[in-house]
Structure formats: structure tokens, C-alpha cells
Image 1 (cartoon, rainbow, N blue to C red):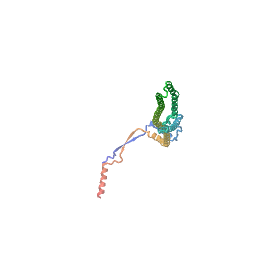
Image 2 (image 1 turned 120 degrees about the vertical axis):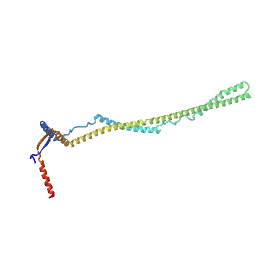
Image 3 (image 1 turned 180 degrees about the horizontal axis):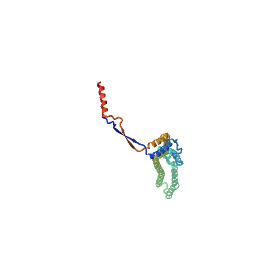
Image 4 (image 1 turned 30 degrees about the vertical axis):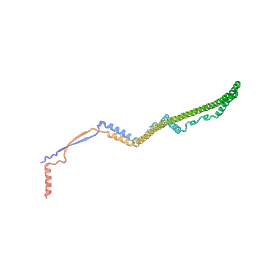
Length: 296
């Protein structure tokens, strides 16, 4: 038998409402967030990238001008070095001989004049003396006189020959000395030319280093200018992104304000009759009805 009473059930309700004392503050914050989210975009409008100073720009111009001037100097120096190495500037006096070297045009006249003086001395002095001596001694025309005269002629011939040899030998020695001097001079000039060529070659690394230094300086200047341009590009892109995302950021400001509202957790238990409760008799009658329908 049913007692006529329904069994009871407990229902728990959880709430997440903010505390009552904080509601005015949340309302004020939402009002302000709503106003901020509706503000239009306001760009800065002023310069955002500092350009190069006047001194820096002047330094860049000076570096470019110096590099151009150095390039011209390098070209001129390189041309001169190549010409020097090629022997174009060798000493022009190399292989030249002394204009006074060679056969002495006055040698023959000198020998003739010397022989004339010797002969004149013999005929004017030596021979008359001999003749006078033989005449005074009474032996004029004799064999002794003939022998003496013959010997005197031989002595004259020998003296003339010796004089000719001395002059020509002296001239030969002089020509040999001039030739030796010419060889030594040409050898010295050749050595100096070689040293000049080697010295010119030693400047090649310096010219190459000068060109590399100028190139490196221009590269550094170009890198500075490129970095400034890239900074300006990045800044323009940042301003574009800021303008593009302005509305989204404003909306996020409001969303963040709404998401910050967090209330406290509360629960409430309600006790009452269970509308779905059935007694044992009611359940038995229901089962009987189902069985009867199966066999009916």
C-alpha cells in the first residue's frame, strides 16, 4: 500500500555572479572600455626614424670622392708601374758609348809632329856635332865616321819607332779604359733598371690594398645607409599594421574588460517532491498490464 507520500529529491544550483559590492565598479569599467573601443585611429604623424646628420652625409660624400680620386691615382700608378716593369722607362744612356772613344783623329798628327821634332834635333844638332868632331880630329870621311853616322841613323830610327809606339800604346790604354768605363756604366745602369722594376712591382700590393680599402669603406657606408632605409621601411610597416589592427585591438580592449568580470561561486539546495516517483503497487500494475498485452 502506498503511504500516499512522494519521495523527495535535492537540487543544487551553482551561481557565478560578482559580489554585490563590486557591481558598480564593473559597470564603470565596462563603460570606459566601451568608450575607448569606439575611439578612431590617431596616428603619431611625426618623424619616427632619425636620418643621418649633415656631418655624416658630408663624410659619405667625402668617402665617395676620395674613392673616385684614389681610383684615378691607382689607374695612373698602375699604368706607370706596368710601363716600368715593361722596361719603357729604362735609362736612355744604356749601351751608349763615350763620344771621344775610338781612334784618336789627332794621333797621326801628334806622332808626325813628334817625329819631326826628333828628326830636326838630329839634323840640326846631333849630326853637325858628329861631323865637326870627326873634321876636327882629321877623321872626316873615314870608316869611323861612316860607322858613327850609321849608328846615329839607327838611333834616330829607333827613337822615332819608340816615340810612335809610346803614343799609340798610350792611346790604346786610353781606349781600353774608356771601353771598361762604358761596360761598368752600362752594367750599373742595367742593375739600376732592374731595381726600378723590382721596386715598381713592390708597389702592386699597396695599390691593391688601397683599392680594397676604398671598396670596404664604401661597403660600410652603404651598409649604414641600407640599415637606415630598412629601419624606415620597418617603421612604415609597423604603422600600417597598427592602423590595420586598430579596430581589432579596440574590440579586444572591450572583450578583455568583459572577460575580467568574475563573480564568486555560490550554491543553493532545494528539497521537494519527486514528480517522477512511483510506488511499488503502481509499478506492479504497470507490469501486469504489459504482460496481459503480450498474451492477449
